[in-house]
Amino acid sequence: MADKKAFALRVDTKLLEAVEKWAADEFRSTNGQLEWIIHRALKEHGRLKE
Image (cartoon, rainbow, N blue to C red; front, side, top):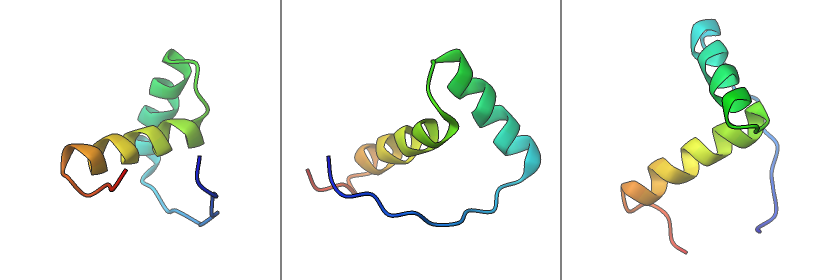
């Protein structure tokens, strides 16, 4: 996998709570879940070069 870069992200509390629950349901970390969501969205919209 490519190098990873850390950055700060401000997210609405309810949105973050929903992501945290989703992550727990799929046995992922919150960070891992956000990365998976972003990756999937980029791929679906043709924005990711693989």
